[in-house]
Structure formats: structure tokens, C-alpha cells
Length: 152
Image (cartoon, rainbow, N blue to C red; front, side, top):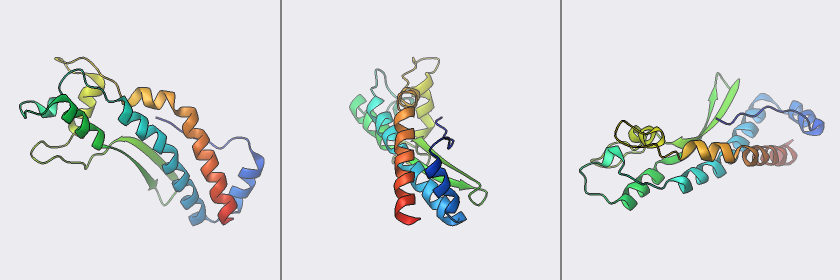
């Protein structure tokens, strides 16, 4: 998980205080979503399967087709909690992405990431999160500053 806390940059914090509640929520939500873009791209790039995905067993799909299905299920999402008192952004496997007759890749992504009794782990989400923490924070700060200067 990547978390952000505004520290430093006095000018940016001062301008943030000028925004109204709805403006602030919009600014933070927009910046958070854009900060997750490089993470979701890196997650997709990290998917390289050495063994079949559990949810595709017996379907006759090649490993390349299985990778494609798993890559399509990767996305990002931002959400307000408690009328904007907390805003979070997530990059990872989308819960609602469904493949006809196969079910949800999100039901099997954790088995690929952590492995099962019969398969070894093939982590693709955790390495992306670990390597892009700084990049994501830079994008977040840049986008938030741009939004504030444009709208404040």
C-alpha cells in the first residue's frame, strides 16, 4: 500500500487551506488517481506467468492468453469515505472485471501473487508498489500543485 501525508512545501499547504471542502476533495481525488497510473502500468508489466492461472484450468487457454486476461483485470480506483473525510486510491485487480464462462480473474489473482499448495508464488503487485512509491508521490504532489494553481 502506498500512503501520502502532506509534509513540507509551505506554499502548497497554504494554498490547500484556501480551497473549500468540495474543491479539496476534487483536487485530492484527481491527484490520487493520477498517482496510481504508473503503479497500475507497472503491475501489468510485471505479469509473466511461469505456470497456469488457477481460474483458467481446463479451458484450453495458452499462457499468453491467460496473461492477457489477468492484465485486462488490472486497474485503479479512487474513492471518498465519509463525505470526503478520507480519500484513497488503489491500483490492483478490479473486482468487477469478468471473463465470459471463466469467472473473475480477481478471484485468482491472489493465488498467482502468493502461490497455492500446487503453484509457486509469482508476485506482480507487491514489486510494482515497492519500486514506484517515490514516483507515485512525485506525480501526486505535481498534480495536486497543478490543480491548485489552476483552480485556486
